[in-house]
Amino acid sequence: RLYDPAEDPNSPERLQLASDLHQAVEAGDLVAHFQPKVRLSDGRIEGMEVLMRWSHRERGVIPPDEFIPIAEDCGLIVPVTTIALEAAMRECRAWRDEGVNIRFAVNVSARSLVDGRIIDEIRELLQRWEIPGSQLQLELTESMLVDDPEAANEVLQPLREMGVSFALDDFGTGWSSLGQLNDLPFDELKIDRSFVQEMRPGSAEDAIVRSTIQLGRELGLRIVAE
Ligand code: G
Ligand code: MN
Image 1 (cartoon, rainbow, N blue to C red):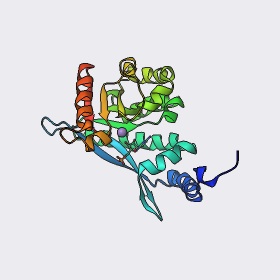
Image 2 (image 1 turned 135 degrees about the vertical axis):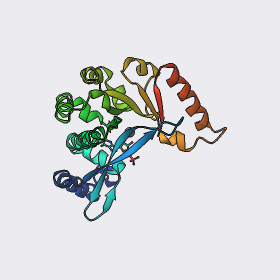
Image 3 (image 1 turned 90 degrees about the vertical axis):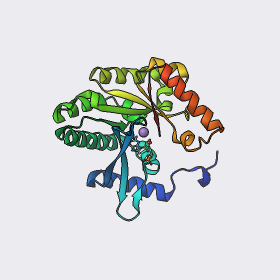
Image 4 (image 1 turned 30 degrees about the vertical axis):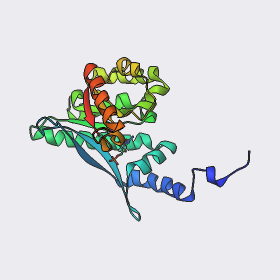
């Protein structure tokens, strides 16, 4: 097989970003933004999702869809997850001190999960910040759970015993079998925004969203529209 630059995902630009990302992690250039999850019935804020942004010194703000895949490829996803978890804990602590006990959700990539250290890390963080596990939620994507549901469960189970809960993120874009929804300990299902954005009355997306809501309800899950 001959080398074809068109098939090489490592453009010089991407390699430069990977190298910059190492420094950004050290320098604290990754910043957490918080996106509220609003209950539609009364507008109440039920929780916050931590979304990382990279404030690049020359290129400005880089969105997560651009740098998270790089972080996953070059072994930086574990420290990135740590930054997100710490931001969640710090913010959660500040709100608790004001008497507001809402849940904070952190996106966790497959690599962070299978890494295994995340169990002790979360236990230690919850203790240090004196936050009950029930105020931490992890958002996981379908694809990672399909790859190896048993390995995933080995990590999810001890976390669940700490009170941590799990959301199935980007639902509808992966290849998960519906049976898995039952086997894994989710209590929230997040309908991917590609469906939500296009759900005009009568569209296929509208039908998909409706039936997903119904499915989720019957499984006793909370449904979130991304
Ligand atoms: O904020 P925005 O909607 O652009 O975020 C897009 C996606 O980026 C999120 O749904 C999530 O999948 C991913 N993302 C954002 N922050 C993190 C993070 O800290 N860790 C991981 N693994 N993914 C993140
Ligand atoms: Mn998410």
